[in-house]
Image (cartoon, rainbow, N blue to C red; front, side, top):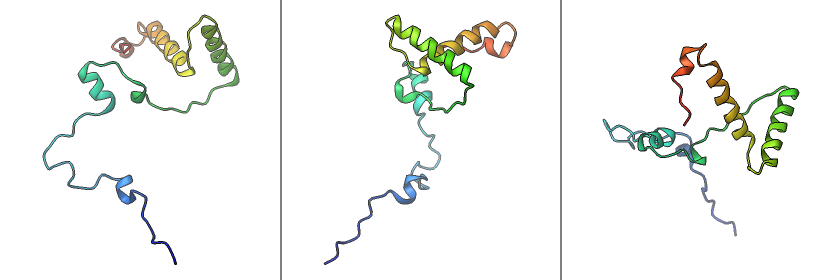
Length: 107
């Protein structure tokens, strides 16, 4: 005897929000980073953005040396945290030359 076929997936709803769910004329509540910023809360791990980056071998070696040296100092850091720190240091350095960077503030 054959088992009845089950549908375990979400189907179309897994990819698209069905029309009519978010009430006509209602503004959708902010989610993610926008909600955290409005509420004044610090961003959590879930609010981070995943990104794939292609680096030159020398750049990756330098990034790895930075990470290892920071770990030797007792702090447990990730590549993302090293990149974050390096990016904000570069923004502070270049802010005088590029006015658009002067408005950026570290979260």
